[in-house]
Length: 237
Image (cartoon, helix red, strand yellow):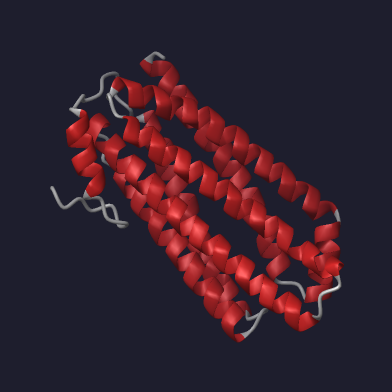
């Protein structure tokens, strides 16, 4: 794939992902501000359709973006980067899909206490998946930074980890003390804004991609990948 097409695929794919991401978590935030009965009614209505539509946009976005990442991976002689991206896609889609399932559990005749427990477990699983997926995209962007010399990708990866970490932390505290503790809901929204910034930075990064990429040996990429911690700092720097 030519460099111009890589840029276009990267930008378009990320923009579609951003739209789907914003729609998904916007509708999800609306649910958080409702009572249990109201949230079930909303999920059974038109917002459920929009939520699934946002998932479709996310899937289309990551497929288009994946084509760009795969082409860059080949140009850089670096298979680890595309592997990290693939892991990110799988875990992120699993996490967002899992959240859509949660409101339908009361239809299985659970008691309120059982439903509350199931919601906590599902949310914890979702948060873990989101955080691990963020760590994967962080590793992908670290390698991309090495090959493209566009350091802004590293910043995007860091924001991904920071945003998902805060989102999980505030969400866990909210569920631990009260299912509808609105103060922590606002903090979750703040964490989501960090993720939106991370995706916007990602768009800028693809726009700034050079025509040529640095090519290192596979052993070098393996060493870099092994030394990346979750906050994007590389011990070999």
